[in-house]
Amino acid sequence: MMGMTEPPRRQLPRWASTLVVVVVAVLLLTPGPWRELEKVGSSVLSPIQLGVSGTIGEVSSVFGTLQRVRDLATQNADYREEIDRLESELVRLRELEVENTDLRNLLGLKERTRPGTLLPVSVIGRDDTAYAQAITVDRGTTGGVVEGTVIVTHKGLVGRVVKANPLSAKVMLLNDINSSVAIRLQSDTRATGILRGQSQGNSLVVVHIPQTDVIKVGDVVITSGIGEVYPEGLVVGKVTRVERNEADPFQAAAVEPAVDMNKLERLYALAEEK
Amino acid sequence: MTHYLAATGLLLVAALAQSLVGPHLPLFGGRPDFVLTVVLAWAMLRGSGEGAVVGFVGGLLLDSVSYSPFGLNGALLGLTGYLGGIGQTNFYRTNLGFFLAAASAMTLLYHTATYLMLQALGLALPPVDEMYRLVLPSAVWNALLLVPVSIACRRLLRALAGWRQLKV
Image 1 (tube, rainbow over the protein chains, first blue to last red):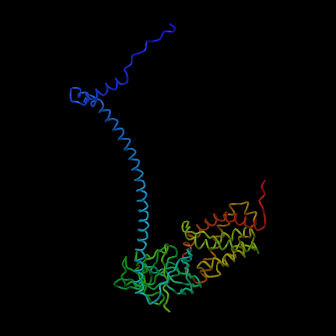
Image 2 (image 1 turned 120 degrees about the vertical axis):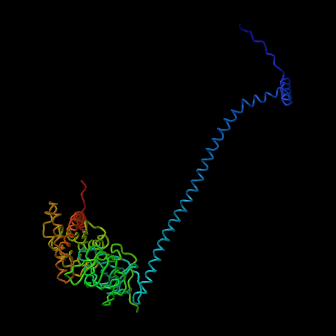
Image 3 (image 1 turned 60 degrees about the horizontal axis):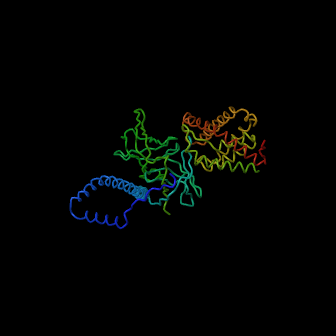
């Protein structure tokens, strides 16, 4: 009905509720059977605590992992840089090792050849046809390279200069069909012969070896110095096959050159000392 | 005169390419003859007279960078240029098969003449069959190269003559 209101509720005064709380706290602090309440509370809350702390721990570890991943990524990048640097260094050291071996061989080569200067030359052109096997090098008469200058690498003989211009020179390679080198086999018989090129390809052949001389596969072929066109003792190659015909006075042998004519690098001209 | 200067520039590039790049492009042992291709293309476009001059110049440039006796290629390429320009330009343009066959034939002719000349000069040579075993792939190379080289030469000549492509 209109105008009717609920009767006011009776409330504890503020001081009374405070008093109740203080009394209960003091009671709980003192020993007694109400201490069992603590155990009940702990039993109820502990699993919850465990679950929550575990979740918090997991979340913390995720953040920690992310941080670790970032640190590891940085560390990884540093290690990769170091690896790259060391790999470059390794390549450089390997090249130095190869160059060291080359120079040692060249020193040995210089001791075997007549006195002269080893002038480094580079290939600037190539003639690779059915009629000619030749290269053009970047040094000519102004650089000490003249007609007849022998071209070598640390592995052995490459060819001879047939045309020298002021700034460049044309070199007839060993495997040119017109190439002719007086050689000797580094064997017990010390057989001599003439080394000829075979047009295209890397193969050479030694002809005019007397039948009485014994040739074996693997015999090292060196220049004999006969004719004074090539210095004595330059390595030419190795015997790979022997061709004998009893009816002929001479035998022949196929030779694999010591220098791969298709991969010419680090060439030197044996210039005469002035 | 401008034509010859342009041709000389083109031949210089071809001679250097033949010396530096050619040896690294083997096709069953055969190598491309860049200078011969340029000479043939020019001769087919401009006729025998210019073909002979351009061939001579190209041959001398090739002799300068290669191992062959100086003047040999000058003579042979001059002759090849003359013979290559005998056919009518329009005939070559309308008959691709003949165009390519002419390139191959001129390559064989050029190398045969080279072989004979070198033999006459007293140089040692490989057997004839070995020579043709290497020259036949070269003939294929040259025939393939002749088309783009001809197009390049034609555009160069038109540029020198002041031609402009009409846009329709």
